[in-house]
Image (cartoon, rainbow, N blue to C red; front, side, top):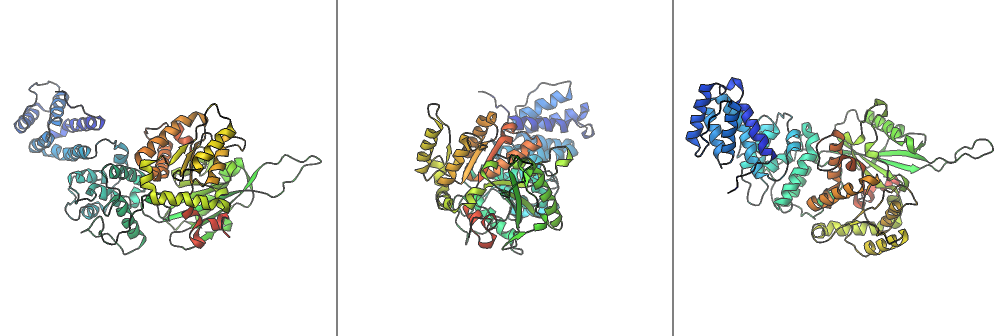
Length: 551
């Protein structure tokens, strides 16, 4: 029978256990201590190899690897080590818990999550008690959120409910010290909730997030330690598209400042020089308004807005100056900030999330490192003839999203056949998408950068047919890798998770973190996510009242 092959995480844990055993202060590097240790381990575990090694590292590796192949043997190894070298044994306990947590959460690399959960939290013990309904207290060897998370992996969940470890992660997502870890936490929990069928239902992940979000928004309303996932009574039913909704809280439930930035074509006449009229250079007027979570209206700060129009090349610097002035106005606030750009058709290909916050610094400091960034079609919001079809497709997906994504392809990939002209391709696309209400997204065949090109013609068609989501690549050479990343995300996490995943991919690419996707392709990825409920509805707080899409 073939022996078990260890994966990368298991090999790393075996190496880490060996490294602790080799610490000189533990006494196991001395012949006498190591001999006694081996005797204790052999008494506790049957079938260990009998070979002896003159090099301590090889001896430790031989024993640890053999124990790792037997169920329960690593626990015996740790127990024996605690008897011979107590200080070493205590250091092994967190690694043992990681080993068993890997059995529970198998099949997914946790290196990014592990790194994100290293900051120390003063309320760690109370969060463990809260997440387990008082069934588990924080042991002394758990000093980080990561160690507490893996410690909870062996604790059974209530019938039909979320595992306490996942509940614990959701509570961590509300800690200011772990703001940078929210994306990793949400991606991790979303994956296993789907894999284990725990996403929906009265005790599912979405329900827990709603309750935590509500408790965070309403001071004085908490989650009882006796019921860490919230009570089952009076819970609203999930509609299958929860992640597609926009509100004024961040994904972790904290209040969110939304800064709506409108970039509109400047129509004022440009001066001519001498007898020959100068060639008109397109210019744009940048304006902005703010929506605070605790305010029912939008707020204009005219003193912060640029007064002069800007060329396309000047837009990045113009927005950077706007953000500098707005940041000064927010000096006494602690909320996260989301930037929502409303761009005309000819600017949809602008990589706004990669614009620098301060171009004068001399190194890349993109907006996405600090802000959540999204792009909307200014033309779609402003032109009311687009709104009915737009609302219809969005509502159809909201009401049937879960079923649609399991039975139909909700994103249509625009791939012209070589034998068709551009006009024939567009006519066929119009017929296919126009007759299929299930399509809520289009993956464009070309970047939308020129009115004469096919990509922007597909955008115009999508606006006419009411398709809310558009995805595209900004560089032709990145097309295939971009499409592959989108397909994988749709297959694994569904359409609603795509904006969050795209943001996480891009922040990972900016930080140089390891990723399954080509960083150049991720940098090239563009997305328009237009939620009509968020953009058009809400009375005086609707972005359309500022952008110009309502009376």
